[in-house]
Structure formats: structure tokens, C-alpha cells
Length: 275
Ligand SMILES: *[C@@H]1O[C@H](CO)[C@@H](O)[C@H](O)[C@H]1NC(C)=O
Ligand SMILES: *[C@@H]1O[C@H](CO)[C@@H](O)[C@H](O)[C@H]1NC(C)=O
Image (cartoon, rainbow, N blue to C red; front, side, top):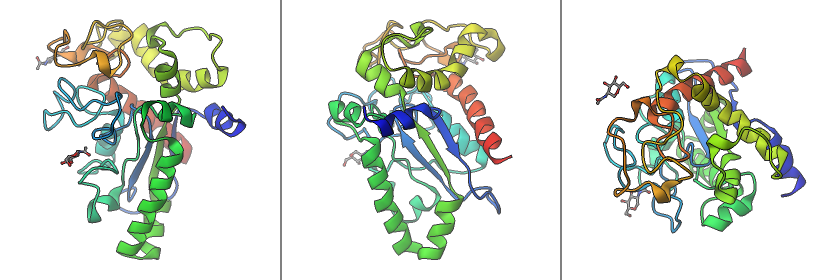
């Protein structure tokens, strides 16, 4: 890991950058980068093991179908888009939906198993953060040719840019049970800090489950509840019938119910940056 990725790693894992927030709707677009916590389908058609394009993923999503999201339903960023008043979610950059006017309110570049170390993505055949930024540039050019430079600049300068990273470096590279990560080990403290920043709200849910209506904080709904990522949550897995009381959907990814709580934290972080 190079110096620059260490610097990046020391930033908080969920970085919300609000810039201009005038007008109606409050922001023109939401643009998302990062890992499986925010991937809405970029990995869906990639040749990688790290994807969630099969049941029971997505079973309580609007369409009741797997979309590539690593949860039973919405991600925290979907709730964020809801709260901001958007009527659709930024489409995954590689999907058919990411075309023309659909992209003017934002696009999602995130890819599960990407992280601050580009190697993490390379290892799993997914889209590194560097490549996600290249895709963002390509997208910006498309928007400019669609609406002209002035309007495009207004969109990009007013948009919320959201990044979730650091968890994949940890999980996919080191396979550490998130529920056991309470004290730093020999692995990079920098990544640990990033990781803790995300995981803190989740840890809060685990220590005070009743506060948010959760009753199952140690076992995941899908799979046996330990150490799984998507590969161990599939249509043949033992799966709870109602994940509402579960913090974890699979062995690493939050349930829709937990994502809703995380979205509250996220919005708070974002507003703290503006005001
Ligand atoms: C995956 O590929 C199929 C077939 O080309 C396409 O219809 C679908 O939109 C793609 N899904 C995503 C999420 O990219
Ligand atoms: C799931 O469980 C929650 C309580 O944990 C309950 O409020 C909700 O109605 C249940 N949903 C279904 C579909 O049974």
C-alpha cells in the first residue's frame, strides 16, 4: 500500500461531500463510489465471485429481485436518496439504465471488493477506485455533451459525492469476522481506523440492540451467521424468514433495517459538513 492510499485510508470510511446545496431539489445529483456497502449492481455482470445477483439477495427490495445489492433490501445510500426526495436511485454505471437523462441525477460507480488498495479489486476482478474515477470522468464528458458545460458544471459542483471504502481491504483480503474486530491486530492501523469509522454505528446497534428494535446482533439472517460473504449466502442457505430484527443480512453486510439506521448517521455526517 502506497503513501497516498494510506492518506486516503485515514479519512473516514464514509465521506460525504456536500458542496452547493441551493435550489430545489436540495442537490441536483448523488454520485457514489466505493465497495459492497454501496454497490447497486456494477458487479452484477462482471466475472467475479464477489457479487450478489442471486436470491435471497434483494428479497425485500422494491422489485423483490436481486439487483446486485449486498442486502435483503435497500442500502443506506438508497435511504439517503429517499430522504433527499429523489424518486429514483443513481443507476449502476455498467447497467442498461445508466443511459441519457437517467444519469443526470447521478450515477453509482461502486464495485464490491474495491478498496483503498487497488490490489484488492484486482484480486477479485472488480472495479478499483482508480478505475471508478476514470469512469466518473467518462461520465462527466457524456453529461457535458448532453446538456452543455455550464449545466454539467452545476450538476457536478452541486452533487453529493459519497465514498464507502476500507471495508473490502479488510474483509476480502483478511477474512476477519466484523463482530470480532474490537481490538487492532497486526494489520494496518490505518485501515482499522477506516473500518471502525464505518463499523461504529453497527457496533452501537450490537451493544444496544433494543434502541433500534434489533434482537439478533451476532448471527446473520442468511447463512450460518459467521464469516460469510456472498459466497456463503445463497438460495440453499438457511435464511431467517424476517430480517427486520437482524443487524446483519449475510456474514458481513447489514440488513435493510440496519441500513436504514446507518442512513440516518450518514445524513447527519453530511449535514455536519455543511453547517
Ligand atoms: C446484466 O446483463 C444483462 C444482459 O446484457 C442486462 O440486461 C442487465 O441490465 C445487466 N445488469 C446489470 C445490473 O448490469
Ligand atoms: C418482521 O418483524 C418485525 C418485528 O421485528 C415486524 O414489525 C414486521 O411486521 C415483520 N414483517 C413481516 C413481513 O412479518
